[in-house]
Image (cartoon, rainbow, N blue to C red):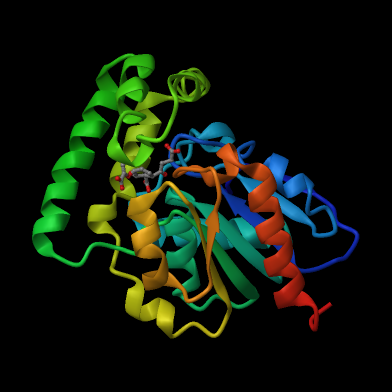
Length: 258
Ligand SMILES: C=C(O[C@H]1C=C[C@H](C(=O)CCC(=O)O)[C@@H](C(=O)O)[C@@H]1O)C(=O)O
């Protein structure tokens, strides 16, 4: 069993860019940005419970990581950068902290490194269990309208929110719920210390209006990049700026390795 993905060749053999979407997204999420980085071979994955991987489930971060490794081997991805948004950023950070062979670098956009208190974890568990119940039982249009009214999405306009609610309606509520529970922030280790031990470069992108994740950025990396005119989903709201940031990062970090 491997994750569904879409691959595109590059003008150079390595490193690959491996893109991981956020909760309720799919492999299309990063393709506008990735297409502007066409020198690199790219793979856009569907996370478990999402898109072409909707029928795949995992029960933990460990299972998610094992599935990611098998999937990368299947696509013959030997040297790669991981680029993950939100949930995808958390999966990418967790993977990087296992020190996998072949990982060249990590770009995290709006990913949380982990909770630090038992009380916060307990509260998050209750929160995510309530969302999981809603995803299983209620019309997706109702649930996503509420989802995109959470504080982290407060910068969305009504038209942006409506477009996201319509787009996310393509999902399967039950499989989303299972992935939300399996990779809830409540059960993610606090990755801050492990991230500091990595030998590969880590870059952190955040929307300039995403105050929550701006505050977390320097806890993940000393290479932080504010994306102007954007909230939490920076690559959706300002793709040109995210493209420029990724191109700059990859040019800087790969110039002596090609
Ligand atoms: C609401 C919070 O956390 C959720 C929001 C963002 C993450 C995500 O992947 C959303 C993608 C999207 O809807 O565009 C999601 C996650 O990391 O799994 C969080 O559950 C919050 O305030 O942290």
